[in-house]
Each structure stands twice: as C-alpha cells, then as structure tokens.
Image (cartoon, rainbow, N blue to C red):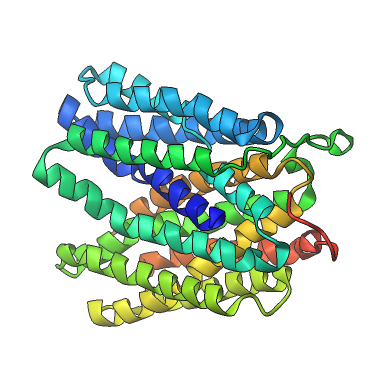
Length: 383
C-alpha cells in the first residue's frame, strides 16, 4: 500500500505548484489591483522553479528524500502564507520568486521513489497510475481554486491550497521508507543526470512536448472565443483531460506490450498525428471529438517518459533527472504559451493549432534522430 499512498500524497503536495499560475494571477490582481504585477509574479515563480528543481532533485539522492522535503517544505509554507498578505507590487514579485526557489521537489521525489519501491515489471502500471492522478489534479484543481475564490477570495484560496499541499507533503515524507539509504551519483560518469545521452534526448523531446501543451492551454480558450462561445472553453479542456484519463487507465490495466523505447516513440508519433485534425475543425462539437482523441495518448506518454527517465538515469541521479525534466517542461510550456498567444491574436479559427502539431513533429523528429540514445540495455534497473 506504500506506493498508492505515495502517489496520493505527492499529488496533494503538488496542488499548490500545479495551480500556482492561476493562484498567483488571481492573488496578484486581488492584492495589487494589477494583472501586470500578477503576471510578473507568476513568471518569476516559474523561472525560479526551473532554476531550483534540478538542484533540489540532486540533493534528494545525496541527502535523502525526507531531509530535503522537510527542509524545503517549511519555508515554502511560510512564504505562501506571507504572500497572501503582501500588497506592495515589488514585494509581491519578490515573494513569488522566493516561492519558486523554495518549492519542494515533490514531483521529482515521487517519481524517483516509485522506481525504488516498485519492481521493474510493475513500473508501467505504477507510472500510469501516477499520470492518472496528475490528470485528476489538473482537472479538479481549477474548480477547487475558482470555487474558493467565489466563496471567499483569492487569499483564502491560496491559504486553503497551501494547507492541502502541506498535508500532502507530510504524507510524502511519511511514505519514504525509514531504512532507505541516500544514493551517491557515479562520479566516474560526471556525477550528473545530464551527462547521460538518453536523459539529454528525453529533455529535448519533453521541452517540445510541453511547448505543444503550453500552446493548447492558450489556443483552446481562444478557439471557443472565436466561435462566440468563450464559456465552453472549460468544457473542451475537460473533454481533453477525459481522453487522457481514459488512455492512462487503459495503459494501467493492460500494461506495456512493446519495448519501452518503441512505446515512447510510438506514443509521440500518435500525439503528432492526432494533433493535425485540431487545425481543420470549425465547430465546437467536432472539436470536442477530435480533442478527446488527442487526449488519449497524453497520460500514457507521460507515464512512459517517467519510466524511461527512471531506467535511463545514471545511478543516484534519478531525482536530479526529474528535476531537469521539470525545468525543460517549464521552459517549453512558456515558449508554447507565448507563441500561441501571438498566433491566436490574428483571429483565425483552427489554423493556430498548427503550432501544436509543429512542436510535436519536431519532438518526434528529435526522438527519431537520437533514437539510438534511447536504447536501454536489457536488465537495466531504475535508479
């Protein structure tokens, strides 16, 4: 039961991080009456998280999960609580930056811990369940935040989300086996996760993959708005997430039937192919059908990525590898959002979704060109 508990605890602990962009925009506008300040704060938090994630991920392996989660968790909670009461624009942005810097590496810890707790033959199902939990988080998280804002206000939403995250973090710390010894990176191979060619390939692909998702989060609302139905954007996002949940559930139930590298490239190709029809649809009904299909490979691809990282990372560097994965994702998502926003302002229906397809095709090309680096020796064990 330790692994399911770990997944649930880490999912709850991730709530303040997953909902951070929405929370900080709402809080920043509430406290400073400026969306510019709110956006700057959200950006500062994202940049600082991208910087700190690999560092804390590396410390997980060398200093132990309990020590690092506890050491980062306390200032993280303190800064969140304090930020809810900051009204000065500069103070708000600085507080957001501190929030990003001291974010506990819960995602890196959870994903690397799964690899140490679960036998290799059960890793696919374990990472599938983790991906499903993440989908529920992104599906229910916005409803949680907006509901709290409607019932109370933005500071209350931040404090309540902080409380849930703190409880999840306590659970994540408790889920770490007491006898689990810290791992030391292999100094002979440079001591860093990015010294491994497979990890560098995965990071490049993941950045482009998140570029496509960052674009989707902008383009779906823009699409609904262009059709005169801005209120339907949430429905379309829900349908998209539902497709991902279905895909993740199928993978968890059936398991992986092909080699890991083949599954990784195959799912990436499926994402690229199923993204193309998004640019050809001009009605909400048909778009819902197409975006459901596009969602089906999402959770399976995320689960396969996590499993591939666990297997490919040099000994003692899995935590750092997942930290770099977050950095790549934050960077890619920011690029995708910015590009999609510029394209969406042109007012076309459907065509802007080509940004999504271009990013996924680029990711697929990179994976194919560097496919040999993804060949994991038979008998390799997750680290």
